[in-house]
Image (cartoon, rainbow, N blue to C red; front, side):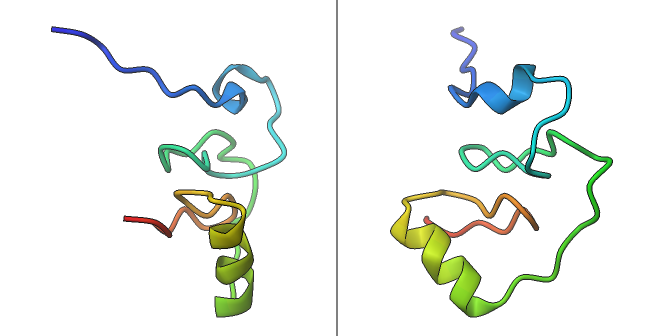
Length: 62
């Protein structure tokens, strides 16, 4: 069995600037407040090809 690791480097940082990983959606900085994002902000994240929102953790791309 092969263990898949997220390629995003925010998992290894001591104080990442985002709450949730944009690749896997897991919380990487629980000290940041969960933000209520707008549809426009999510659309911008989709254009950047993020799978998950870095602020609220919502899945953007299926």
